[in-house]
Image (cartoon, rainbow, N blue to C red; front, side, top):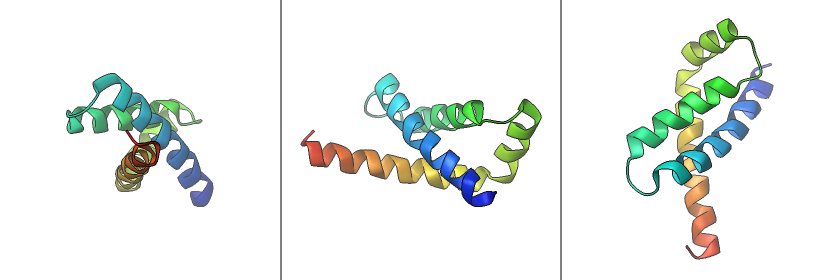
Length: 82
């Protein structure tokens, strides 16, 4: 279950970071991060009470996966020459 949950959050984090980057552009790191976290929690495929429990219990994991997704996005931009 945890491995599957981690995979779900990882995929959501990549989408969330791309959406936050498009919405805020460069800068505004904290706002982008908060937007990404909210996107992840909102889009978890569970009921609302379970989403809140997951966001509380796995907040550190969610934060780490958002950071990893940010690094991934920066690498993608470097590869594309942006």
